[in-house]
Image (cartoon, rainbow, N blue to C red; front, side):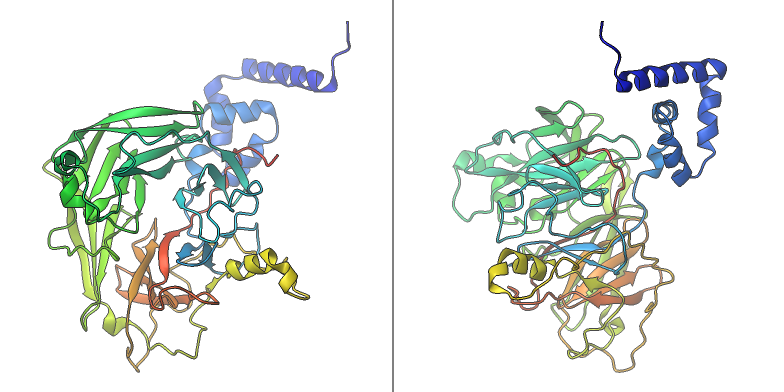
Length: 469
């Protein structure tokens, strides 16, 4: 008979230790000891032994602290740049950037020279067939996506990631059907059908099972319209919000589909009354301090009217309630084209570094290893220098205001002006804070509005995804 290995002996010793400790004290008493610790000490205690690891995990003591609560920057995708950029305050810490070079070779090459399609939820990213955490540099490859359930000549799928580490370390990926953006006439039977249908079937991947499955959701309430009436309002920008067990997906013609993960139902939420649809610049959907929000800026005239709505339940119906409206043009500080030192945040310029690395034979004596390394940035919006910029010269140029996103935990909206300077607008005080220069180096498609998509980044330090192999 062979001798037990050291690993087997350690495993047996750990099991005996756990049984001995759990025999001496009741389970609730054992759990009450680490429950009194601060989150950082609780995480350290979890690593001490298998006993404490199991006690903390069995009682889910650490999960409530894993949900990110800090904005560490804003990811921005530009029209003709090959990587996403991170706009944030410089700091030291783990490498986080829009260049996902920790993924397997070729993972990011699929979309080059265009930025990869991303979705995000509470610190996790969905990049094509990979779910990854740029803060911990871990990733997992999804099984091949199944083909769309609906006719591909009329519809395609939009992928959305759902993840809440305060409840579970598992995540899900939803493939939500949407109407293709086309001016071609479709089949008459398809054009006249209601959209979305009363029974909406979606492909869903669960990290718990490791498989794709079909889930059918039943519509409550009216449809948004017919396929014909909504397909000409297809938006270029699609945003999603995961809030209290429900996925809010921004869809065609500025309506929102709310999918309840618990009861198999979904609902169409139409845009705010009086909102003017713009294909290139529709509503911006996001979440903030009190729930689900949407916003829009009308800067076509001399005014620059910012409107913000919050989603409320009224008599069993979900309605957008106008909570803030103001003309922010007079508040915008003077813009000096020669001065790019607008604030403490910077754009990483990962595209410049990535391009040099890709075409290194064309550059001499270039050392890019030190570039674009900054994270664990914790922006304190209440104490940051630059709050409420005062400038008696007034505002004297074209505005071209775009949204960078909502602050997830404070009633603050991130904006850009002519895509050149980032700003934080505080809804409660109507104050504007200059953050920094946002315009990338090199040629950019769209002189005044080169930004495709954006989202605020809240890093998650859960280290549970597989290591690189």
